[in-house]
Image 1 (cartoon, rainbow over the protein chains, first blue to last red):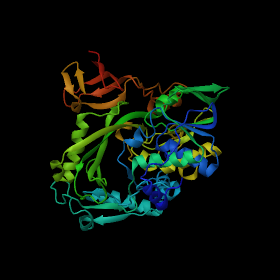
Image 2 (image 1 turned 120 degrees about the vertical axis):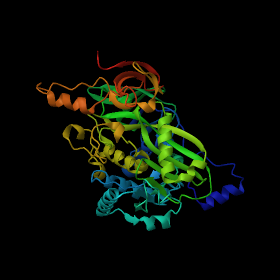
Image 3 (image 1 turned 180 degrees about the horizontal axis):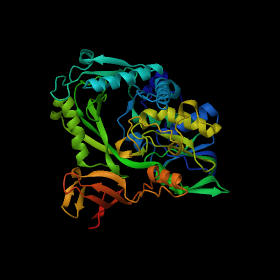
Image 4 (image 1 turned 90 degrees about the vertical axis):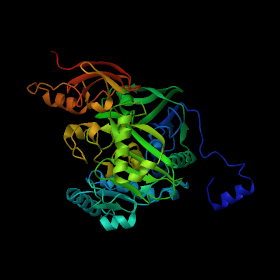
Length: 416
Length: 86
């Protein structure tokens, strides 16, 4: 059923008692054309675009828990396309354009809010780097504005502009960036995919891959054997574990990234703000809570919870930029498991095993990539060739030397 | 998380710096398959969920490199020893 003001009014008259479930939760069939492992944002968006753009509707999305229970529910909901490198920028801009039309495409309110993403700088060197990044963005057709101190002050008067150590010298603003509602993205893609015939199977953990004659032909799961012509893995955080079932080793380490939300306060942070002298980013949810985060903890982890030293580091970054947040109490903190690749950029590619496709290595960038990741992965699975904006995200780029190292950090995953 | 440094005793995580998998060894550059072995050593990791041998540097303590066995699912430390054999 299509959601509209009329359907809302009609159900209001009935006391909202007869809404149908938004999507079908089904038992798996014995075989499909395509099986997607992982029912997060990326897996569900892949299924949606497989059905909508490529007409492939014999698709199952297998989720070991409930949909959106992994990193789709553990991020800070930021969307942006302010990347520097030519391998990254067109991809994230493709994602940004899909975000801008997502609610009409899905007929679902994903609460996309283009409130702007502002990267602050605190020194001449950082200003130069911001200007370079902004110029690179504009050469790719992406909006970017370089603001001076007064420009930032007009936008966000509440910052500590004249801090002795890190005074705010200006910022690089992408007005089209912002936030979206993470759960609604998952539910919206699930509803749209399910409506086109995709089966969403929950509590179905993949325990092995079935191979015949060198290619994969199905998966063993906790809900039985499911055969498929093509299998796509979209299990970022656990990519190494699923790849190990196929005998593959990946250029990935799993790391825990923590995020935090404060008690709700009146509106004071109008956009997404990043601190340039540390790793700290903050926005304010519609409920009023300040949502913020920083670096990964920095050691291999699958624990989905972090440790106190990084809590302290993140809060110190917040105090340096916004000293008054020391008066607030932290309501919740949580940790998600990131696939940290050796160059800090993702992988969307075929694997050396026929029939097995990989979507992995999202590092800090998974949520904002959700629409384009699904779009490009669906294109790859359907046509066996990469979509143009994801052509650089190859699995063999590490051996070939074509790295996409946005931070220039080298092969040390915990530093990206 | 506290790491039991063999020299200093149990110390807080904030005193340590992480390097990564302790089983990575630099290949022989003169071997015929050196290029492939270097690719594996630099880029590929087992990344296990469970016990993991890893290198930590006790930067704010005795400045020793430690080989720590740690469960990546629970963060439980299963053992720590000095890398340098003295």
